[in-house]
Length: 579
Image 1: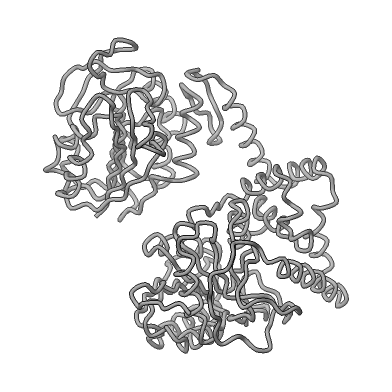
Image 2: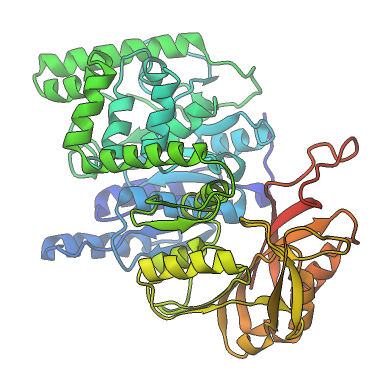
């Protein structure tokens, strides 16, 4: 039996909205858990919808009163949303925030009654499989299949009724249903994704892609499925879903999923990383019997057809139908077609693209694709401002995708953007004008520790930089300026991507960094120069920042054997500094 020390217990996160009775049952059961009095609980209470009537507002207020009624765990932190996120966005945002903060997490919704051993099982499993990269999901619920199964086993679909995961697994969560849908289809995995065509997961994902449904669980399952991840389940279940009374979001009234008796405790032991064939076969039987029972009672024939119709209709016909029927699907398809076109364009070719639904001028399609993915898919610059008009300094703005992203994030933001390369600056200026971005100041200068004129290596894409010694090709002269004059007031985000000049620039304005709340810097190490990472990190530390460091494109997987080099550099790092 695994022994978990109190300090290693995973935090619990509970999502509630407008079901006070269900919420109280969930919390009472959680409080009765063996480890509740040693655990930390975060409760995310969703806000009211704009069209909420008095009855709905009353239910929301009663629910919020319930969560404050007792000290349900050792520590309780309540987050009351000011607006309505909806179940899917509330869960994705909350899980992401807490798992990134704590490294692991246990997740509950407001209609899940747990047995006394639920937290023990979850924490034991999180501890035991922490370093097994392929184990991505721990489920506390298992469907009431007829065949008896082992106490724990791997069945590689996810259950959202009481589950847990790690930060290392959640980073693979892809919230873009169109992308996962396309990958599953291209790899001919629909049959397997649908548990050998016994359940319509693919149709649910399809509905998410075209906007007719918004759920998070099928997107998490699709993410795990594409990573070939493993999901641990207990038998019998440690969770009962009491929400199938028709009152919850995405719930209908039935009792098909209920257990007569839950397991009190489940012992977690290390088992081989292979899916249990009996469990998968039992789930196929369960799904088939579920559909037969529903059809007999004539309550879900239409849903059954919708969930399984994707298996029999030709792909080309489905595709044409979706293009005409669903605007979001059409947009997603055009987006994928544009990505394909851009990938075929030779490097350093000037052109235009509608990748962001408006015409973007670019000077290199490869760098456009990379930056677009980093900014708009991965959102590496996403930050929370204290006001609606944050002050942002964009050092190394390139063609302006970062400026466009910041303006999408905060439409009233004040932005100062630096870009010294004349050809790149022209594209930057054009894109800012095309997107009609106001309160944006563009400066055609490089940042340095003084105002002067320097030689600049104009690479032709996103790699332009101050020239290094003995460099003779693709050189132009550019003007430089100091950052000091722009740091005399509070800066909500300072983004620095200036291809090797970052340490010199930060040394020049070190005494003013107390005005900066968030700082992103891309660090560059040149093969023929002393590395300055230690100096850069000391500057951040002395200014009161904490930081996170991530590898990006240029790094060496086996540095003791071979050092990867590109454009005179041997390392690039993304550094996220915050206070």
